[in-house]
Amino acid sequence: MTETHRPVRRQARGLKRMEEILDAAEEVIGEAGYAEMTTNAVAARAGMSPGSLYQFFRNKEEILQGLLTRFTEGRREHWNARLTGDVARMPLDELIDQLVNEIVDFKGSRPAYWALLHGSATGDRLAAASGRLHADIAARVAQIFSLRAPHLEQDRCLTLATMSLAMVKAVMPLVAAAPPERAADLIAELKSMLLGYLLPALDDRNARTGGAAQPRNGPVTS
Amino acid sequence: MTETHRPVRRQARGLKRMEEILDAAEEVIGEAGYAEMTTNAVAARAGMSPGSLYQFFRNKEEILQGLLTRFTEGRREHWNARLTGDVARMPLDELIDQLVNEIVDFKGSRPAYWALLHGSATGDRLAAASGRLHADIAARVAQIFSLRAPHLEQDRCLTLATMSLAMVKAVMPLVAAAPPERAADLIAELKSMLLGYLLPALDDRNARTGGAAQPRNGPVTS
DNA sequence: GACAAACACGAGTTTTTACTTGTATTTCTA
DNA sequence: TAGAAATACAAGTAAAAACTCGTGTTTGTC
Image (cartoon, rainbow over all chains, first blue to last red; front, side):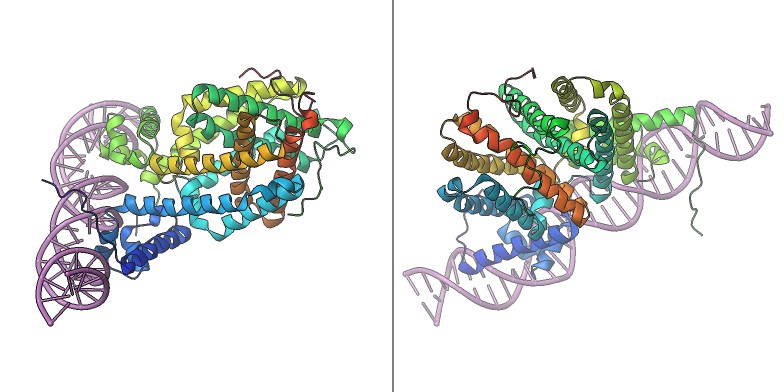
C-alpha cells in the first residue's frame, strides 16, 4: 500500500545539503525563536526551495530531530573529550572555574541550542513575566534571610535567595522524570544541598572567617 | 477610525465566564501540552462557542496572559502569606524541608503551571532527548568524581554530578537576563556554590564525619 | 554514453486554527 | 418596562504554514 521507508542513497551533495538545512534551522531559531521557525523560512534561509527541503526531511519534526541529534552528539563528544582523566587531577576550584566559563561561553555562542533545549514554550513576553515572579519571590525570601542573618547585606541575601530558588527550580524536572524512589533521593539531596549552602552563609559565626565550605571571593575569576 | 479600546462593563456572569475560560485553558495545557492548546479546544472544554470566548479575550495571547497573571498573582499572594516573620524563627533545616515539600506538591497538583512557566518549546519528545543528553553528561562527570574520590559509591557520584549540572543549567537563564555585572556576580556565586557543595562531598576526610556542611540523611524526611 | 537515481525547483494544495459575523437571548439601568 | 449593553451561539472566513506534485537537471554506475 503505502510506500514505506525506501532508504535513499544519499550523495555527498545531499549530505552537505542536509547540514545546510540544519544550519539554516539553527540560524532561524537563534535569531527569531522557535515559534518563528517555519519550514519555508528554513528553506529560504538555506537558499533552496521547500520541495528540496522535503527531499531530505520528511516533515518539520524530522528537521528538529536532526538538529537536536546534531546538538546532542556534538555536546556528547565535546564533553567526552573534555572530561578526561586529566581533569580528575587538577584542583577543584580551578576545574569548576574553567568548566563554568566554558559553558557560559557556549551558551553565548549558540543561542539556538538554549532556545531549543531550554527555551520557554510561550515566547519571550510570558517568559519575562515568569522571570519577574521569581524575582519577586526571591526578594521575599531575601527578606527572610535578612531577618535570620541581620549582619548580611541586602544584596548578599538576594543573591542567596536567587540561587536557592534556582536550585529548587532546577531539580523539579529531574524529580518529574525520575522513578519515585530516585525522585525521593533527589529531593533529599536538594534539601541537604540547600542546607549546606545556606547554613554557613546565614551563620554569623562565619561572617568573616571564610571557611572552606563557603569560600567567597576565592580563586574564581569569572 | 479603528474602534479603540471600548472598556466593557463586565457582569458577574461574565467574570465567572472568564474564570471558566482560564480553567479550561489550564486543563487543556495540563493534559495535552501548550502546543495542543487551541482556542477552539479551550472554548469546547469550557462548554462555550468560539464566539463567546472572543467576547472576553481579544486573542489567544490575552488568554495566555490572563492565565499567567492568575498564576503569578496567586503564587505571589501565596508566598507573601507563607513567608512571614514566623518562618524566620524556625530551624533552617525544618524550614527547608517544609518549603521544598510544598513546592513539590504544588508542582504535582498544577501541571499547567510548569508546562507554561518552565515547559520546553519543542514538545515532550525533544525535551526527553535533551534530558538523556544531560543524563549522559552527568554520568561522565560522575566518572570524574569517582576518580577524584574513590571512596565514594557510584550512585553518590552520580547524584553529585546530576545536582551540579542542574545548578549550572538553572543559573544560565538568570545570567542571560541579568545586566553584565550582576551576571558576573551570579556566575561567581555559582562557582562558589559548586565548590562549597563538591569540596566537602569529594573530600575523603569528610567520608564519615558528617559535618554540618554536608548533613546527609539529616532531618530531611522527603 | 545511457540509464536510473538523487537532487532541485516553485507554484500549488490542504489542513489547521485564530478569529469574525450576524443574530438571538439575557441582564442591567433608567 | 423599554432600551441598551452584555452575553451567547454556530457557521463561516482568512491566513498561515506544512507539505505535494509535476517537471527538469545533475550525478553516479554499467
